[in-house]
Length: 246
Image (tube, rainbow, N blue to C red):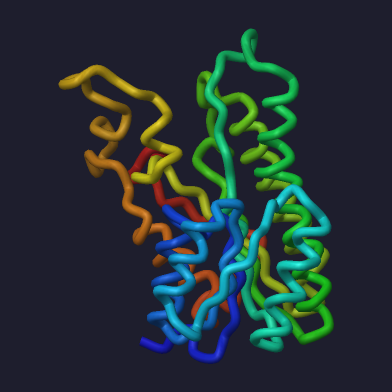
C-alpha cells in the first residue's frame, strides 16, 4: 500500500472498464485522482464512491477546450499533477471497404488526437513542476493487424510513434512517457467486438493463458508505470496480452 502516496493522477475514460479499475487501485495506493469521461452519470458515481480522493470532470478528449478545463480543475482541487493515463478510446468495427470516412476520422480524433492533446496539455504543467509520468494506453492492435478494425489499429499504431517521440522530447524535463498495450480485456468495448455463436471458441480461448484479461490486470501495470518504481523507464512499450504476440 502507498505506492502512489501523495501523487495526483489524471485518468481519461475513467467512468468504467480499465479507467475505473485504475482509479480505484490508484486511490487504494494513496493517490488522488481526477476522472475524465463523456459518460457523466457513470463517471460521477465512480468519483463519489472514492470520496475526497477523487473528482469527476466532463472530458471529450478530442476537444482542446475540454482538456484545458480538465487540467484547470485538477490544479484547482489538488494543486499539482504527477501522472496521466490516456485511457479513453473507441472502436467502430467495419471492413475497410464499408467504413465511412467520418467514422475513421472519429476514431483518430478520440484515440490518437485525444492522446496527443493529453500529452501536450499535461506535459506543459509537468514541465513547470519538474516532471511526471504519462501512460498512453495503446493495444496489441498497435503491433498487428486486426481485421474490421482499421481505424482502431491505425490509431493504436500511431500512439506508439507519439509515445516514443514524446519520451525523447520531454525526458529533459523529467517527464517519462510510456505506452501500455493490452490484448483482449473484459470491458464493454471488447464485449461488443468479435461476437460469436454460443459454444464457439473465441480468440482469447486460444491464447497461451487461455482467457481474456481483466481490467484490474491492466490497472496494476499502469500503477507500476505511474509509480517511482518505473523511474528509469521511458519511451517503452509494455504488453499485457496473455501471450497473444508471443
